[in-house]
Length: 335
Image 1: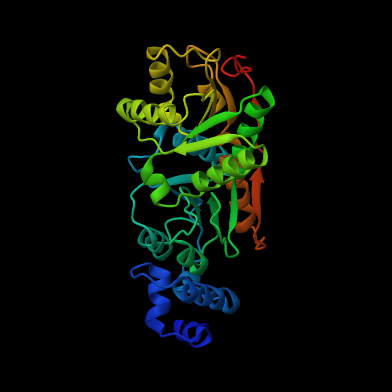
Image 2: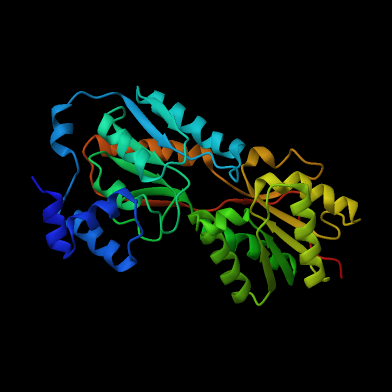
């Protein structure tokens, strides 16, 4: 059986360094982390593999890890959860929801206690500190989200880079030459959350390609933050005619604040929202949206997890193409 010492020797580091990479208890340099992850993968190291071999019975439970932080939109998260629950029941499995923000420690607890047969993990960061632990766990793992370096893990998500590009293309095709992105809360960007950074990348690259003036601002989940964000954007560019909103929680406050400013949607300013289709018609103006396919992503995550449980070990990354639906909130800018 491969031991932690074997991994340390292969990576040229101390066993304690391997332990810190797996547990996330200490900061490790990116170069050293990559060496350790590569050794774990090549050697097939699984902590507690012997103990788990003794516990051969299945629980018929899938664990979904989604830290419910204050900057998450719980309503949207629950659409993913509901879809995963339905799909799991179709496979005669129950879903265990783990919502505490514990980092790698929660993953180790689930694996060592054998309370679930597999893990699905949401709220994935670009450089997610949980990845080394997930690689090492003796459990099938599927990420709902895509880190910059999946390291052999299976992942499924909306192609947020393409989604950001699609929003820009829609406004550009209508004739808009000056647009802005109202993004997720500042904490989401500080964590390097994968979906937010990928969307921003797609937005900026498409704006550059289409030669459109484009700025972006993070926005916290409050009316005051929305109003301050609009103050900044309109002061920076009074000719702004298009908004892309990648922050479902601020949509009601945003539309209300635009009305108070005397800006009509879409006559004075067009709005494209990234949100589930179920939210598109909840406002005074039906929103043009790029849909967040929560139902499809949740179902595919479960299907991929069941494939892993059935012995299909080849990792796969599924990025769902964005679907933009034009409604009443976008139009050509006034001449």
